[in-house]
Length: 168
Length: 224
Picture 1 (cartoon, rainbow over the protein chains, first blue to last red):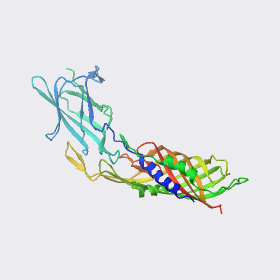
Picture 2 (picture 1 turned 90 degrees about the vertical axis):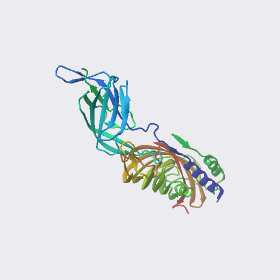
Picture 3 (picture 1 turned 45 degrees about the vertical axis):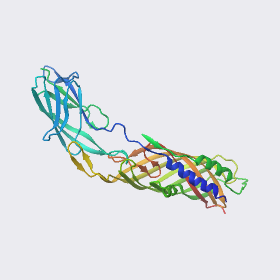
Picture 4 (picture 1 turned 30 degrees about the vertical axis):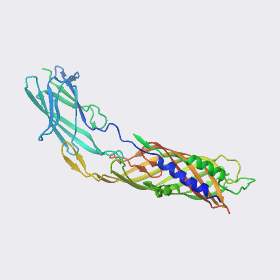
C-alpha cells in the first residue's frame, strides 16, 4: 500500500475545497424610499387621470415630524427625492416644506404605515432593514394626492410613491 | 465582489495517485449483476475542519456494484458550520443532516480494482440556522436600535451534482478514492431575513453553482 499518494491527495483536496470562498456584498446597499413628483390631471368628475412628471420649482425641505432631523434640505429642480425610512417604527411621519422664491412656505405632512423586515446578506456584509408599505396619506396644502406604486422599499431604488401636486 | 484564491495541488496529486497508488491486479473472467456491496466514509469534510475551515461534514455511504460498471449510491451525512464574517463580526451557525442519492458509472473496462467514474447525485438538506450580530442594529436617522439575534430560522435546499473521480484498491477489501463535484443549487427556501452561509452537504451558499470534492475510504463487504 502506498501511503504517499494518499497523503498528497488529502492535502490537495483540502487545498481545493478551502480555496473557493467569496464575499458577495451588494454594491448598491442603500435602502431608501423614492418619491416622484407629478402634476395632477383630473376629469370633470374629479377622478385622477394621472399627470406628467415635474421638477419642483420651490425648494423642498423634508424633516421628521417631532424631531429636529432634516432628511433633505432645500432640494430644487428635481423630479424625485429619495428619503430614508425608519428601521423600527410602524409609521413614519414626514413634513414636506415647500418654499417659493419669495420665501413663502407651505407645509404638507406625509404619513406612511409599513412593515419592517430585517435583511441579512452574508456574515461579512452590513445588516439592513427592508420595508413593505401598507398605506400612505398626506395633508393637502400643495399635494393633491399621493399613491403607492411599489410597496417594497429595498436596494432596488425603484419609485415607491407618486406625489401629485395641484395644478392651479 | 472579490474571491480569495489559493494554489491548487489537486490535479498534480490526482495524477500521481492514479499512476503511483498501488493495487494488486485481479482479472475477472465474468461480471455479475450484483458484483458487490460496499460502504465507506468521506474524510474530506473532517480534514477541512482540522485544517481550519469554518465548516465540517461527516459522511458515510453505501453502494451496490452492478457488473462493476454501475454503482447506485446513497450518501448520508451531517454538516455544521459556525462562521463569522471577515469584514464584520456577524455570525451564522448551522447544523443539519443531509442525504444524496445517485449513480456512478465506471469507464474502465478492465476489472483490476482501479476505477475511473462519472456520476450524478441529487441532494437534499432541511436545516435550522442562527444569524447573530455582536452589535445592535442602529437606525442612524431616527436614533433607535435593537439587537440582531435571529435563532432557529428554517430552510431547505435541493441540489444536483455531477461527479468525476478515481478509485483504487489499496489492500484486499479496502479501496480509496477521490472525486470532484460540480454542484448546482436547484431550489432553496430560507427565512426572509437571510440565507445561511453554508448548506450541509452542498457547501458554501454564496452562489448557485460551486465546486466540491471528497476523499473516500471504501470497504467492499463482499470481497475477501
